[in-house]
Image 1 (cartoon, rainbow, N blue to C red):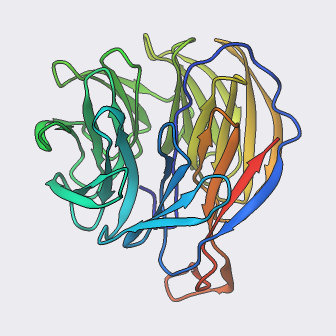
Image 2: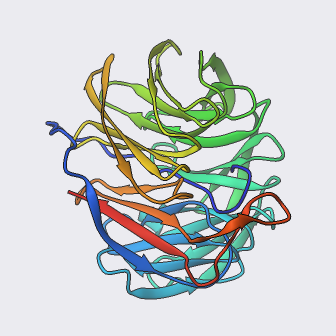
Length: 335
C-alpha cells in the first residue's frame, strides 16, 4: 500500500437505486481498540455484524455497531487487507511482510490454512463472477488469482508497475490502480491477460479505487495531487477530475445515495455526489482525524468506518510522528 502501515483502504459499494444527497454527515461514535502497531484496510463481513480491522501483526474483529471485541486473527505480520468468500464462509488476509494469505473460517475466525503469493500482497478482493480471490502484489508488480475452493494459485498477471487497489465489474473484468505509473490497468479475468492501460490524465499516484456498476464508472483517488479521477470503464476516457483532500488512500462508493467518499490523510473526508454518469459535484468536506486515510462503508446503514490513532506532536527519527501506544481506534461516521 502506501508509505507506511498506518494507511488505507477501500470498500466498494454495491448497486442500488434512487439517490439522496449526502448531507449532515457527523461522527457517531469511536471504537477504542488500543494495542500497538500500524494499520491498513478494514472490511465488513457480508450480511453480518462483524468488522475486520488490519492491525500490524493481527486482525481485530469487532462488532460493527458497538465496537465490542469479538476475536483476533493472529500471525498476519504486515497485514493489509481482508476479503471474504460468502459461499464457502471463508476469509483471507493479505500479509505484506510474509508474502502469504492467511485463510480463516469466518464463523469461528479460526485459521485454517495459508497460501503463498507474490511479494508484499496488499489489496485483496473476492470476485463472485470468476469465483476467485484477487491479490495485488505490490513489490512483485503482479496480480495473483487464487481459487478459494482449493486455496491454490491459478494465475499470476504481470501489470508493469505497483498495483495499489483492484475492483471488479462483476462480469469478468478486473481494474487495477497502478500507483507508480499513474494509470489503470484492465485485466480480463477469464483469460488472465491485460487488455488495456489507461492513463489517469492529471491524476498522480492513484491509491483508492471504487466502481459504479450502473454507470460503468471508475473512481480513482490520486494522493499526490489531491484529485479524484472519474473514468469510463468501457474505454478509459477520463470524464471528470475533482478536488479532494490531501494524502487520499481510500475511495468508497455508496450506490444507495450515489455518493463517493475519499478518506484523506490530512484529516478530512471528501464527499462527492454522482449526479449522472458524467456529472459530479463536491458536496462537503468532513473533518475526521489526521492519519485517517482509509475507509470502509456499510451500504445498508450508510455508516463509514475510518481507522486511525493518535500521534506524538514531534516527528521521530524517520521523519514521521510516532503512534501513541494504545490509541488505535475506528471512527464511525454517519447521518
